[in-house]
Image 1 (cartoon, rainbow over the protein chains, first blue to last red):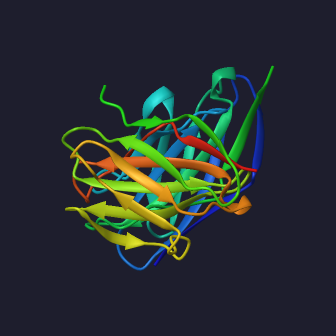
Image 2 (image 1 turned 135 degrees about the vertical axis):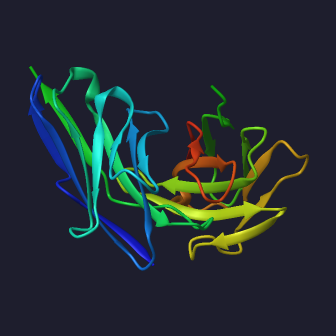
Length: 114
Length: 113
């Protein structure tokens, strides 16, 4: 079984500041980890994913995340926030090597202020 | 870039009515999924579908729900007798293999009144 915990339902940063969105997971099998972004009234867009190999993964729009097995974490970062980054961000996990479902966290709403 | 297409984008229905939500997955994808998101809550898995049969379903996916791939291109979710609590955004997703990420559609917002 898998689960995801996203710490902080709302995060507010200034434009140009570091973005850090936290995600911790639990999985009984090696995990595949994902970050999705949802803009208002839109669907889910894949930002990045970790399956195997390099633990630091880079995604779209300047985001990256690092898989840390010892900490069971997959935090999302971006060095410099932009106003257009304001959205809801979801971390998700699934079991590696299976067609199993994605289990999502509760989401973090990112607000970017001037 | 290939997309998963969902129609309609918004549907309003009366309680007790049947609704069919439609999805066109990416053409070479083999795995299909439905998820839903009740307003303000997290995205929840409903059902996965492969080789013309359900491969996994959640406890939410009770007898009121069914899925079908009627013609090799569409993938539908039917709710037989809608309840107020079925009001949600429903997302379709597809994947080329089971061992990969999904592509989600933009969703259908279902409002049951």
